[in-house]
Length: 156
Length: 153
Length: 290
Image (tube, rainbow over all chains, first blue to last red; front, side, top):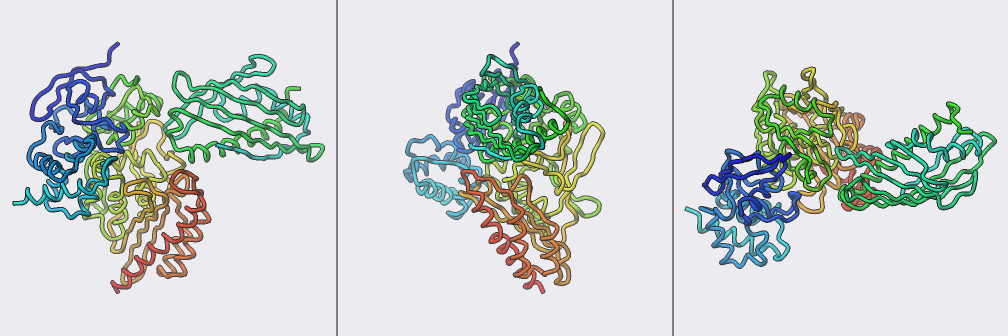
């Protein structure tokens, strides 16, 4: 007997219909059913941060969130980047903060939520804010630079 | 992961020997052991449930006696797996009996256990603590059984 | 493949307890924030047939004041909310500081106090903080509600006073008292589980210690707490000698693990240092207040 059930998810400001098993994570639904592969499957344990997406404007681990728990909520992946996330994308490019790019979507969405709350963070605040997002290429320095740069340009 | 321990039993060595080589008695003494059945003269099949917090694992094991010196020592190797899952357990075990008095025997045991698969992701440090405690529990149950007059002879 | 066949979303605690009681503790599990349970499901460490999500139960959410001035922290309150709660001040600040040290901002946005303490990882941040603050845990089961002091709630590695079919509904704190609460954790990298942690909660009035709660995390099957150490610190007015003796007592009573984070000997060695530091900071603040 199939346990897969229909599910309506609102992703990047559009409605999507899919089938998901009760134990399917949001990450599985986004990547495998809906094709939003910007959210990356790294550790699948919540440790690396590569799967981070926004749910109702707050960052969550898509690998630790069940898809059926997200019905009726507003999900944003890197494909739907707008506002601060878009400014961050440009800043990452300008600062050379992208190497392999696997951690970048999670970094940008986590940073976007942080800038909503703390529009002008210090470098230490940026480091603390991104402490749950791992990058195995860089020394984090350019990533922190990029977030600070985005905060400056985004300031009123 | 190495576990070892020593405990004393108030019974003659021959009687302790008969008890540790009695599968029925062992089922009652080994924490989490649900079943032991002989396969042939040297091998036993055993089913053991290991519980650590919310994680429960049921292993199907084969214990093979590789060396036996009656009344003194028995060496065995254990191999097995956890149902259809990927956890594999192997162990080398030794039990040595020493006569301390006419009705007092020292049991010394050691086991080198290795676990691979999903359980190995769960902190080994904590598993060691858990296993050490199982050793103490085993000794208590074994002493109780002997005191209650258990013997296969 | 996962055996999970049902994801329930009850609207009340009573309904959640009824669904939980239908299982045997392994087949049916409660889903709080998911930060630990879903990770364990992904790692195939647990494989429940049914999950009972607590997300739709309004009564479990948020922090509110009780009639006696105490605080009730609902089981589904996220670490982020607890870390930002201004009413967790004075002696109760220990809980706020512990919440702020859990994992990282994203996980703090998911994880809940109820889920964390029901899992009862002895290296986690809440257990020693709740023990130091002498909080109580509210539990619901088929026969109604009951309260258990935090000092009796944590019983062993990953084991609590919860009986099969019971769930954590809230953490209860006495009315916040003037004083100091602090939580310090020694860890390899920011957000990791503790090698060792020290939670201290001191309530004072007119320059005198009224109540001291000291607990050590990460160094045994449950938070390490000794009435004797608390009494020493209170009667010794948080003095250096009392701090040294309390640290020695706790180190002697510890039962630490050997693991990738540190050896047992190292953990025993850092406990007194961390206790002395926490007590010295509290002493300095008490003296400044005089």
